[in-house]
Image 1: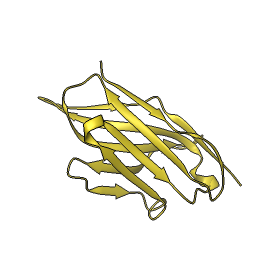
Image 2 (image 1 turned 90 degrees about the vertical axis):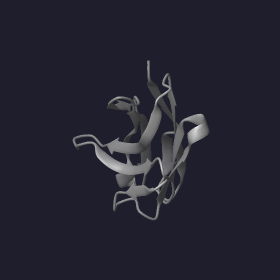
Image 3 (image 1 turned 90 degrees about the horizontal axis):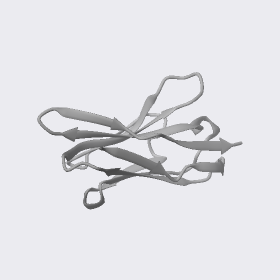
Image 4 (image 1 turned 30 degrees about the vertical axis):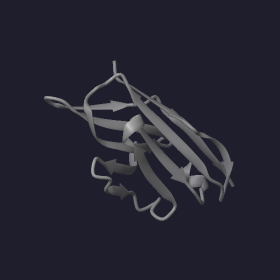
Length: 118
């Protein structure tokens, strides 16, 4: 059974930093892309950053220049380094992985809370 487990969330003051981690387990399939999404109360889930198998990346405009996504293929892990955090970054952050088998399969983690105080 494929599982994604996030860690690294917490409470931080505005201007601070956090590093989120996510590990994918239970699968032998290739991982095409891994991404981080977030959802604030009353809002839709939105893409924060995504990294593809060739290490190309995309970021939402709201985090460009502040967040960095990276991956360790040997460990099936993806990271999100978040710097210069703002109160509006407060949300539950979810890891997502796209696995390649005979079809494409997408899986989600359970989420980790990030709270930025002003």
